Length: 399
Image (cartoon, rainbow, N blue to C red; front, side, top):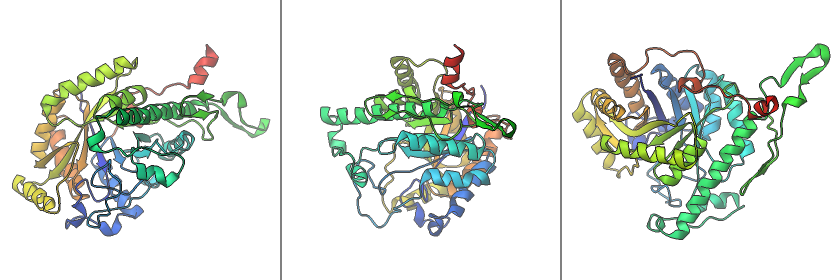
């Protein structure tokens, strides 16, 4: 089997809410460009496929469905993920940069322009993690719509199910609009010929004329076509509605198995979702998420996790592994044998666990022949075995 993909999810001081208290954490630098640049460079030193950067439209909460919890003992506040990626882009050369941008309150035109700009800025290393917002307090920041209060105890009710379905349908439409806007400039629309006094070929810039339930967008975009044609689109999925969003709209899907035994069922659900929405090739690339607490000594890793848990438990949708890089490599190899294409690791503490991934896990995977020893040339899409698509409007013109 070919070497697998390895990504890292960056979020504040780390994925454990008490991460900022750890000796190796840098809470004084969380809101600085220097902090994020150092994390991205570390990931690149480890030859990782990409980093995702978490984001949201409200202050963090102990429960992602709840409104602000007013706690003062955990990190609150964050920098804009897309702007962080834009800053980091010229400071890195290879690692993919995938900011989270929420569709629920963000216009597709803005998303298309921002991610396309990032792709130009990074020379073909941009992606977009699609996310929805179900929180009423986040809707109140914008004042243009209201959302019902969605709580865990109401998730099974018809009203909540309908509201959630709407959010995912809107997200799928938003991705479709963004993809059309990326295609609205053909690759050779820019002529730049001073002799003929022509900078553009207007015949190669197209309106997208999208009319749907949630959006009416004429286009064209204002940013020339991205270097990748279509930057990588990724989504996190736990249930059928999210799997179908990924099947309709994404290139890569992040999943949250609790163990190797869960993977066949998850892959079955993803396959069913792709069939249900009529997805044709290429199939979704599937990465499994895992929160990691790493140390060269397993007892030390478990002790650090216990110390973190003294300040409150980590409520995680993904499984948590505390142990050595070798133990993590064993687990990843066993999960990979069940059929996933790779992994997105969530470091419990930054930069501590990211450094352990880069300096401990990656060499162990390389020793086993499971991970690259150098970056190859090419874009982020190409790293995932995806071709650069032609503009849909150029194809229609040829036909």
